Structure formats: C-alpha cells, structure tokens
Length: 178
Ligand code: NI
Image 1 (tube, rainbow, N blue to C red):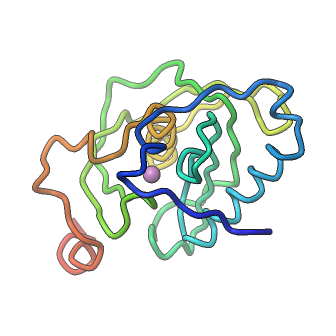
Image 2: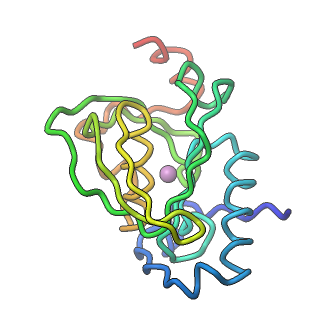
C-alpha cells in the first residue's frame, strides 16, 4: 500500500481543522483505503499516532499504535492499533502530567507538554460501530495530541514554557532521562 506524504507545519491543512466523517463516507472504499494508508504511513515514520489532516485529508480520523520497540518513543507501554473516527473527548481528569511530545508534522522537535492524565473518549471504529474508551498516561497523551490535530492545534501551542523546545538529537543527549 502506498505511503502518504505527511503535511508539515505551515501547510494550511495542519491549521484548518477537519470535518466529521459521514456514515456513507466511512463505508466508501476510498475512506477504508485512507485508513489503511494512514496506518502504513504512521508505522513507516515510527509515529505513535497520526491524524488525517497530517496526510492532507481534512476529515476527523485518527490512528494510534505504540509498539514497545518504537525508536522515537522507547520505554512506553505498547498500545494496540486503534482507529477512531469522529472522536470526541467526553471528559478529562483535572490531574495533569507533563511529558515530552513530538509530531510527524513538526519534524525533529520535542517539547514538554502538560496534558490531562486520563480521558474518556467516544467515537466510531472504522466499521462505524460505536467506540468508547478510557485512556490514561501515555495513551491519553497521544489521544489528546491527535484530537488536537483535528481542531488545527499542534503540541507547540500547548507548551507553557517554550524553552523546553529541543531538537531530537539534543533531547536524546540532554533530556531523555529527565
Ligand atoms: Ni502530531
């Protein structure tokens, strides 16, 4: 399956927000192929999640997967492949946690982002069945990061302290154990 080109910060699709997917659209072959290609593109880029706007499609679809041996995010618990269509966050914990984030659309940068420690999320799976999940820790972080993409937000918008912004090599050298 073809890998999709990843939109980078500056391309309007990253900021414009995404439209809900209709039931008919979700059943269409093109949308199912898009989801397959998003999964392949995320895996190829060693991402832990990808949102449709990041592959130039302004639709509310996110894909998340963490494998324990991901080189961009080592030491994280694995998360099975999760496709969420029209996700919305129902509730989030008041408790927040800081963690390092990067983004395939903002290559080579990391920053320290506070996020709700846990979230409750509703949406549909790729077959249109209702999906309801609770996520905490890194999973909740990835969910919040990807849902942000659907509203045109990126992690840099969430940085309370821009001085934490670091290139990946410097992150690995100075901050990985912080
Ligand atoms: Ni991202």
